[in-house]
Amino acid sequence: MKMMGNKGTKKAKERKQDILRKNIKIASWNVQAKASHVGDIEIIAKYMRSRRISICCLQETQNANKYSMELENRDYVIFLGRQEDNNGGLAFYVSQEWREYIYSVRKISDRIASITFKYLVRNRKKYLNIMNVYGYTQMRASNEPHLVNSFYQELGAVYEYERRSTDIVMIAGDFNAKLGNRENGEELILGKYGVGTRNPN
Image 1 (cartoon, rainbow, N blue to C red):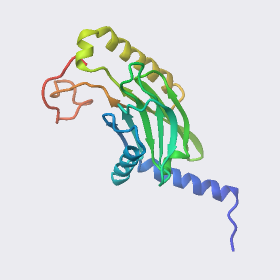
Image 2: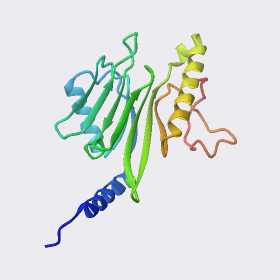
Image 3: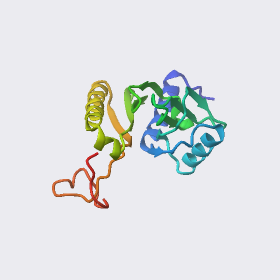
């Protein structure tokens, strides 16, 4: 019988991480206040499982508390509270396969949070950062445009901070923005299925 030493165990762990990395699915979902009760959270997790989602950024949870919750199937949900006006609320859903790679979670503001994962690629540590954002509504943006400007300035600053120490940075969330139809020169950043008219958000 051939015994597997530390080196073999490390290689097996790296192979597992490589498989996860290649099959990762990242999503974003405005749950519209349906994440305050255990039953709601279990429904969210069941839906994520059915779609094979690895990590999901949740907005408008309306969950006032800050805590982490392990579900029956060992999926993980991290709640980061809600806004001072008792609206909104950010959270992260992490599948059981990815929870062991959580490196850090930060709440930057009521509208921006980030989660970082650490994993191995060819025996080297790699870091994946996902930012969860919740933008202002169009009505709020029209009445108080300075808030939107501050929001995007802060988002830009957080992105620059994260990319200095992270291999991959992704931004997901609900920007309350409508992109509309693709315009000339945007072929590299927008798909061809935009609908309607773009708003200032």
